Image 1 (cartoon, rainbow, N blue to C red):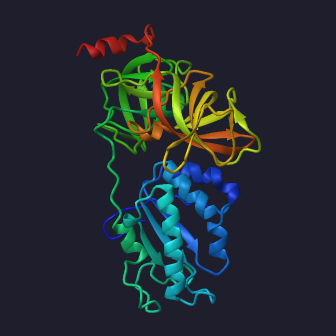
Image 2 (image 1 turned 120 degrees about the vertical axis):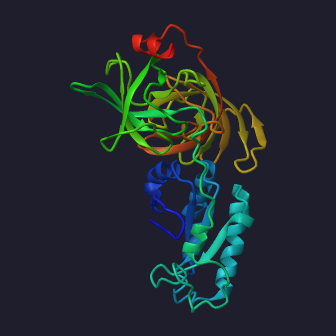
Amino acid sequence: VRVTQSVFTIIDAPGHRDFIKNMITGTSQADAAILIIASAQGEFEAGISKDGQTREHALLAFTLGVKQMVVCCNKMDDKTVNYGQERYDEIVKEVSAYIKKVGYNVEKVRFVPISGWQGDNMIDKSDKMPWYKGPTLLEALDMLEPPVRPSDKPLRLPLQDVYKIGGIGTVPVGRVETGVMKPGDVVTFAPANVTTEVKSIEMHHEQLAEATPGDNVGFNVKNVSVKDIRRGNVCGNTKNDPPKEAADFTAQVIILNHPGMIGNGYAPVLDCHTSHIACKFAEIESKIDRRSGKELEKAPKAIKSGDAAIVRMVPQKPMCVEVFNDYAPLGRFAVRDMRQTVAVGIIKAVNKKEGSGGKVTKAAVKASKK
């Protein structure tokens, strides 16, 4: 969607509990969030109640690193609201208190009273709410800070697929998350521990001189078979902080919905960037307050829904992850079990395997002498 100064890609996350996985998948790629609140009597109260989705969505967005938010008080046209300022003020007060607890800087969060149905304050100022002096939704979106695309960081490109293309060879495909990749670069794939040269890069069937963050590309690599690398591997520049296999890592985990107690030894599947690998909760180090991060209990026997904890995790197969603060897209994950998302987390520290003796192609040796 093109606004006056910016282009927005909209990732819609439905409000219903069954769609929390879509919500997490979408949120992990978002730069900003619009929280839609139903202002009607009874409806707002249900959403903000202890089990309400409004609370869960705001907490998930913050936990997954989406720090910018616009709050829309929708359905201002409802007959129980009738475009009234009192109801709007009541909602702003209550939602502000909650999102502040979650961790948002309330001073920077803009609230807009709207009617999606009638179009009030969406694009043009509404004449039904003369008491409201703030921006329309479109203006509020334009005030968001554009994300800094991390092209100055070292390269990280998680593979989505690897193709074998006749006459060309092996073509890995994925999205550049950080850094820049150019033809001629020597790259390493982790945890496969394969090093080779990038021959060429394509996007939408056109050759690229360089691939930058956000680009979905296919690239041709020399002397590497389709069996050597796979989905979930991460490609990086061999000379600039190359990716490595994680021996184990420490993460801050929030349990969303798990029917029982989770103790040491639990080994669910983690979805992190494009990898899908079982990881063992080797040691639950502490239970923490999920908003402030303060320690509540050392080495708890078990954790349950609603708890946040610091956990040392051990991948059950080779896996490449990063610290959230260094490479955000490779440092947040969802925990899947019983066909649902039972937890989300962000990675605080990684203990990397110092690999040696991986496969280095002739092309890589030659290119690195250039």
